[in-house]
Length: 70
Image (cartoon, rainbow, N blue to C red; front, side):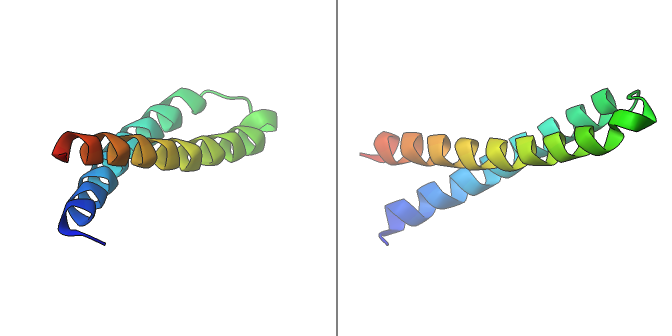
């Protein structure tokens, strides 16, 4: 792994973490008023959404950072 790739990975990791944290807080606030019957399903979908959000954000930011460094 070259220094440029390492730098791009670091930028992508922190960007993905920050945006995922914001999405997680948003989902926690929005899912709060759910009726008790739907809370389990809501939490499962929120967890899945957070994982997918992190992965996609990481991949996109890493690609952009690598292209920007060229």
